[in-house]
Length: 188
Picture 1 (tube, one colour):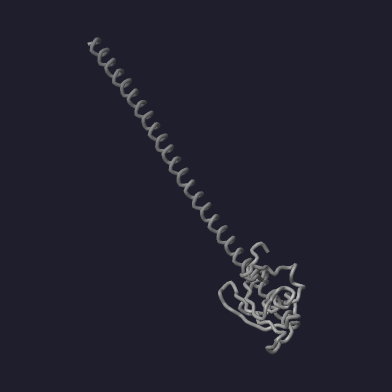
Picture 2 (cartoon, helix red, strand yellow; picture 1 turned 120 degrees about the vertical axis):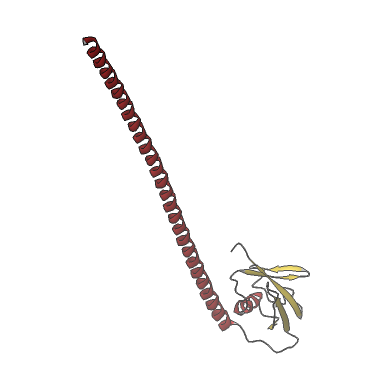
């Protein structure tokens, strides 16, 4: 009987050890599962955080682009308004000094001016008027809104730039009728 008790006791101790080992293994498995879950949650949190940061960056970039575009529009509007004020001032100033149009006669030259948009303007000048007076006339045209340009004739091609503006129309080679073209100066 004593032998049976000892055997029975050994069996109980073995079972207890096995249950303890199993219990310890189960606890370790639960700990590993918790660590995996925490790692997965951390990874999901980091991914969500990164998405939020990217979304915020896109929002900031969009706001910057909108602000830049608004500033460009405002600057363009201010530049256009400034240009219009300069054109109006030039039209008034040149219109005040422009000589009256003479009646047709032997000392009169009819000048036709072809604008870049294809429009044709015509006026008579005295042959003693200077090329500058023709420029002044072009400057007064409401349909022409360019600050810097050059006049030229096509055949023979003659450019009437700043070096020719003090010449009289007769000295510049104008006949009784002449057609001038407007070339917009892009670099100014």
